[in-house]
Length: 187
Image 1 (cartoon, rainbow, N blue to C red):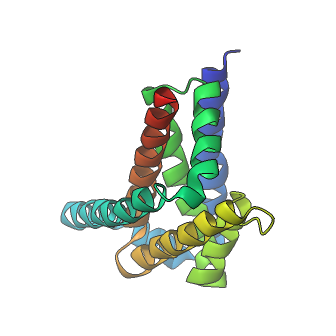
Image 2 (cartoon, one colour; image 1 turned 90 degrees about the vertical axis):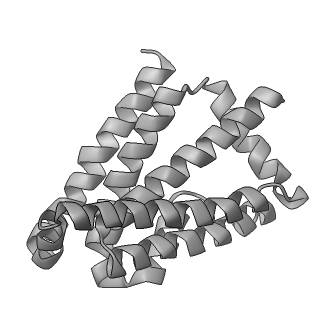
């Protein structure tokens, strides 16, 4: 099986796996969240998509600016080499980002956040992604910034809706991976 197929399989498993777990937990423990998720009008959905995209744009301006810092050169280099090593194509980036954005937000913001709150959920989310490593100062710095962005997903979910958080997460993942892909091709 090629690497692309492995990555697409991982993405597709993420969507029903994490997303399904999130929906199951929401169904049994947070039925009001399921109701909020399924009773969105077209106009409200459009607003959530727009707000999620706007949050992503603002976050990306900050993230891409921070990634230019000399301190983060090893972090950018590591992730760019990873993308280059696996020759990740644009369609795979789109699939990975969409599946992660939807699946992870269903679990973390939809199911876990009502129990643990915005900031602790964001902390767990970033910790599980491996960004909070006190032995790696550049990665820890970047992880701290991602913690704030992740908390932003939580506030989007709380005040606007889960679709806004899913949109922001997806757009940010796409843009960051495309940026890293471009860096990899330049080196």
